[in-house]
Length: 143
Image (cartoon, rainbow, N blue to C red; front, side, top):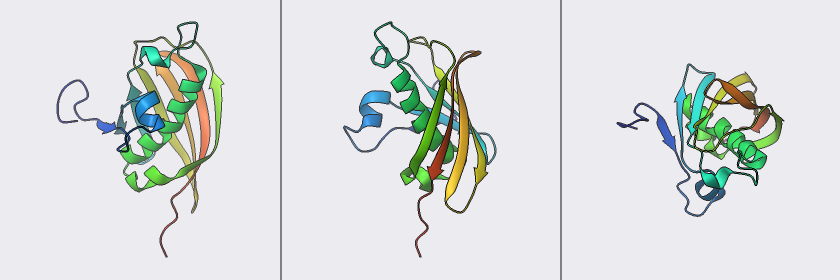
């Protein structure tokens, strides 16, 4: 983004109208920190709430899944936007609040010829809301 509160961040939204990312999560903002780490931010909305008024666990898992791909783009791997999640594990550590930005601190732990092994933590301010690990299958290289 060239200016505003997200100046210097990469805005990520699905270019295909009506997809899950566009209708359920919304745009995120990411910034790389070297080749293996990135931060992904999301503004939380009332539509992300559960019946108790906190961030819904399914939303947190969906955002974690999205954050892995936004992080790959932010560290210079945008071709991996079409990669697929092989597995994703979530650990819920606390209740998230609507209206406060959600931050994913993402790390690539290991990369092989076909896979990325990744982890992240989700925070609001300095409070951890959840943690996750995932295995992502790379986009095959054309032969």
